[in-house]
Image (cartoon, rainbow, N blue to C red; front, side, top):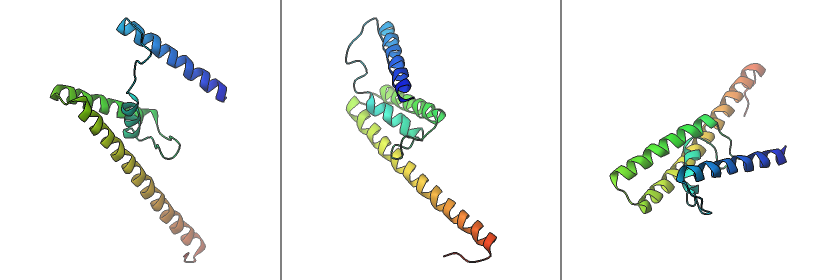
Length: 128
C-alpha cells in the first residue's frame, strides 16, 4: 500500500510538472521553489492538524487554499512587497496552528466532561 501511495504521488507530481511546463512554455528545475510556506499555510488554515499527523479534510484544504489565494490577490493589488507577504503568511500559519490546538484541547475537555457525566448517570455513583 505504501509503495502504491508513493507511486501515485510521483505520477501526480510528474503530471503537475507537465501541466506547468505547458502553461509557461518552459521548464525549470527550481519551478515552485518558495511555495512551501504558502502551501503549508493553506493546509493549516483549512483545518488540517499539523501537530497530530496531518488529520484533516480535503474540503477544508480547498477552502484554506481559496482563502489564501484571495489574500495573496489582495496583497498584489495593494502593492505589498513579497518580503512582507511572507511575514504575514508566517504569522497566519502560527495563528492557524494555535487556533487548531486550542480547538482540539477544548474538544477533548468537553468530551471528557460529557463522558464522565454519562458514566455518573449510568452508575449512580459520583466519579472523581
